[in-house]
Length: 193
Image 1 (cartoon, rainbow, N blue to C red):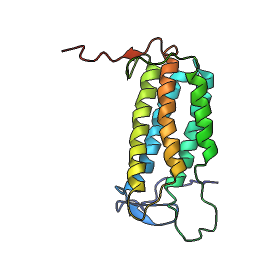
Image 2: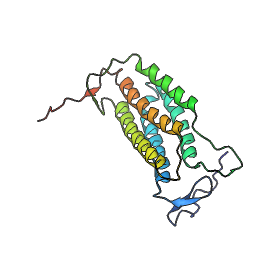
Image 3: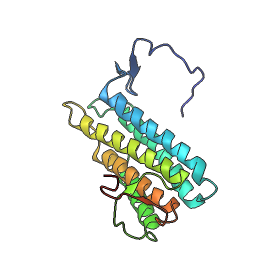
Image 4: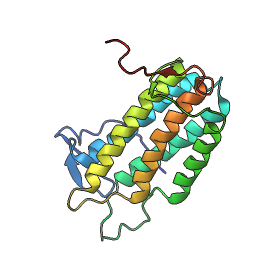
């Protein structure tokens, strides 16, 4: 259980922040940036949900589950894998979370016709918000992959898979809220030459 009685601690005033392990790192550290960008994704999904809560309740419930999972992912990234015993089992993204996302993607994609062009972000306010969340999710994924290639840093394969599926989900969700793709705004190559 997390208990936050006092919001400011002043411990970050020197430009560092603590990982779950207690290790302090600069706030610009790639690991901190990666889970910060996961948090940005979560905030973007929260904004998108302002447009989906009443009009797409089943999709909105899926987005709510993703938001909770993104906190799990943040905890995972904030607890680097080490050989030391932490005295507890750290929270990690697991295969069942990835599999659930895949089932959700398949379910909402089923009634949507295949694409014949790329989709421009927009159409409806909900779709535009979901596209924004998708692009932030892709940035988080890129940072996680980059972190996984830094010597001495580990990022689980399941975490990277999960973030990849989140962006896939958000793309399909954007099409679903655009009348199952019927009101998507399609890219017309060279249209304005």
